[in-house]
Amino acid sequence: MKISVLGAGAWGTALALQISRQHQVSLWTRNQAHIMDMQVTRANLQYLGDFTFGDQLVVEGDLGRALEGADLIVSVVPTNGFRNTLKDIKRLGSSAPVVWASKGLEAATAKLPHEVAQDELGDSRHWGVLSGPSFAAELVRGLPTAVTLAANDAAFAARAGALLHGGNFRVYTSTDVTGVSVGGALKNVLAIAAGISDGMQCGNNARAALITRGMAEITRFGVALGGIKDTFMGLTGAGDLILTCTGQYSRNREVGLRLANGQTLQEILKTLGHVAEGVHTAREVMKRAHSLGVEMPITQEVDQVLSHGRSPRQAMENLLNREQKSESL
Ligand SMILES: NC(=O)C1=CN([C@@H]2O[C@H](COP(=O)(O)OP(=O)(O)OC[C@H]3O[C@@H](n4cnc5c(N)ncnc54)[C@H](O)[C@@H]3O)[C@@H](O)[C@H]2O)C=CC1
Ligand SMILES: O=C(CO)COP(=O)(O)O
Image (tube, rainbow, N blue to C red; front, top):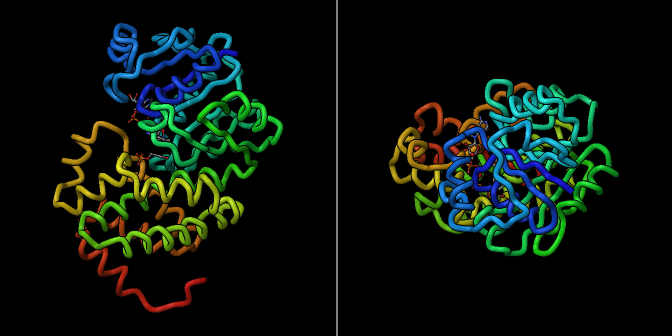
């Protein structure tokens, strides 16, 4: 089988390395200097570190050639590049099924990646989302990792999942595309909240409270969009939320830590070196939450800190001063 991986950041490259243990992989990214660097070093030193590419992994500078003969396309560009990536795939005439790993809401439209896929691909081919608790830095070291591949078509989810599954990488399947997409996107916002709390030395109790009350608001939002409640207790919900809110590799959590330590968002984004999807996603989630009539108090405070100049301390106080209520509401 030939699998094309589009996007050579940390996650695209870790996935490409993993998949190339079982299949031919062509890895493409839009930056030609980065392509040349990877072709020479046979590693992705800029985004992932010194992990050598095997013979089954070809770094391809031409997108048309990367897609030629692909049995499956795996798109791992940030959410804001996903629509154009799909447009390019269509323009170049590839009809292979598409699986993506982007975790966010598209800036300005507030759409989830599967809604972007619906816009661009419709029902003209199979597509699905790969998500779950999976730091690139751990998968690339061959550490055990379990994720979920969700697609509307259960048979396609099973086929694509079986292609990627193997060794240290367990791929479960699901048909709840909405639930899986919501969990992956919104945990990034909650990770910023957890980072802020940890950066303010608020303690373990506060982090656990943010994770569980975060779960409650992610579930409310996801169910309002048609996701299945149980999905939010699974790998792509609770699993990824716990990982990202506690793990030392999370870029979103790092944004929160640095905000709490007094850095400006501009300074942080200039030096982070990677995408932190929660930053623009917080704003987009709030737009949709308003139109759905769903209460998202933690996301709202994160959005206020990121985009409206609220201090982390004020945001924490606002959450603590909310009215007392039943836990189930
Ligand atoms: N890093 C991780 O452990 C995981 C990341 N993800 C998700 O995968 C996606 C990619 O993340 P990473 O690879 O970690 O990011 P990264 O920041 O390490 O690399 C981003 C890559 O995308 C390229 N890029 C940036 N903007 C683009 C655009 N508009 N169009 C096309 N390419 C563009 C960059 O040149 C770079 O190659 C994100 O949505 C992220 O949430 C999912 C699971 C794990
Ligand atoms: O999605 C991730 C792990 O599943 C990575 O999270 P960060 O983007 O916060 O590093």
